Structures are given as structure tokens and as C-alpha cells.
Length: 151
Image 1: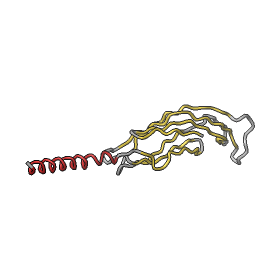
Image 2: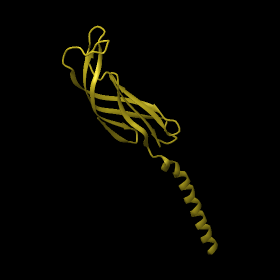
Image 3: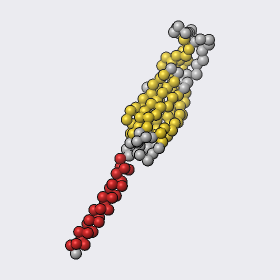
Image 4: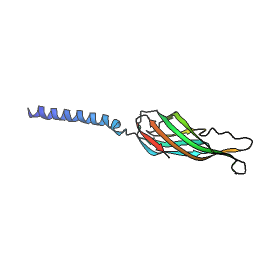
């Protein structure tokens, strides 16, 4: 009787060990952002960048979606850097950008660019400059927590 009990306990322990070892990779998957996401204005574009980890070793790609609005105030400037006469233009654009990014070793680095963020057109050699930009954006990615970006 005692030998049967020891055999039963040993078998049960071995089965639980196999289950625990088999489940550990799934428990290791914990999607999170390592860097960012951050949003910066670069010229007449808004760039959102991030690095995510904890995506697991069986995932080959992750889809991201960036939605929201960007409000800009822009003006035309001469080649020498002087503002052109006239009132700066303020406008709001809707953002809906998506991208699929490769995953290696459970990590991915991504960037989505929204361009142009101002539809102002200038004549001749004049250039559009963004005087101010405000955004209200949400970045979502497969199994990652949504991130709200504002300025």
C-alpha cells in the first residue's frame, strides 16, 4: 500500500513538473513597451516611434494602429527664413495609420509617420513651417496595452 502511494505521488509530481515546464514559455510572454512610444514633429511630419518586448518567440509579426487627431498651425517662410505676410493657417487632420512590424526574439521596433500634417501650400521658393502642433493619438498593438499620446 505504501509503495503504491509513493508511486502515485511520484507520478503526480512528474506530471505537474511537465505541465509547469510546458507552461513557462506562455507565462514568459508579457507584452510591454521598452522604449516609448514617443511622438515628434519632424518638418511637416509627425513620427511616432517605439520598441516593444515580451511578445513571445512564436510570434513573427505584430500589427500596430495609430488613430486620433493632429492640430497644426503653419505658415509660409521665405528661403532666407522670413515669414511671409498673411495669417498662419490652423487645421486639424484625422489620423488612421497602420503598420505590420517583424518580431525577433520577442521584440519589435516600430515607427509610423503621418505626413503631411499641414496642407498649406506656398508659392515659389517658400517653405511650409510648422509653428505649433498638438496631437491626441492612441497607439494599439497586438496584445500590447493601448497608449494615449498627447501634447
